Length: 318
Image (cartoon, rainbow, N blue to C red):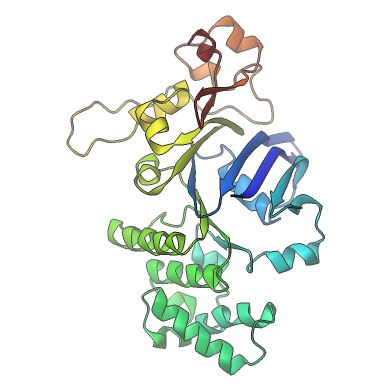
């Protein structure tokens, strides 16, 4: 069953130097209990897409068109107070840097407990703090860490606190914006295992990352974004074994091989300036297969196979 449906979503940042087309006409669904990863280079619109779901697009950003349907409700049309009640209760968010998302002046146990108080699940701070300590145990932290301040914890411990806050009320959807960035591989694996455990309990996960290998290891489906556009979407096997868009192919070639069996190839050029994106296909200035039509017309989305879609003029020939 579809949990969230994003339809024709476009988000612009209105800056003094021009309008940044950060997300442009993006559409996809997230199914209940599914792990979907959104991958792409920095600046492609991944985080902006995630923030739009919980109405946290930073100013001067604005949703200019489209719908975000969550259990039949269009989140774009909700008031600030209505959205505040959904955020944290039905949709949890883990930010990239927990040091900036946690309050440095409050003990982390109180920050976890606050979720239960704010959403009126518990009325007593004593009960809320006890529940917070229980949550810390679930994410693999000793109870005494509840009395610590964020600066007294390691990066991995802070990220576990952030996950405990996001999952406190067992939301239907967990959005994780590059939660393993700057963590060592052992802690990274622990964080991923934590989220995998929540998925097995029925929580859907929207995982934002630039690490294609990490996405392939855990996801049910992978969405590939480039310059604000969703250029490919499919199951892990479809996207990894049978990539349909030249950008996805280029991303896969840039992933290091542990055994050194292939040559790493960088993607030539740079992502476009989204204040003035290229005409036609946005990838054409960097694409080795670009044709005249790629420079003139934006490609339509084509179903490569069941459940696997991509936007590329080359697919017309198949």
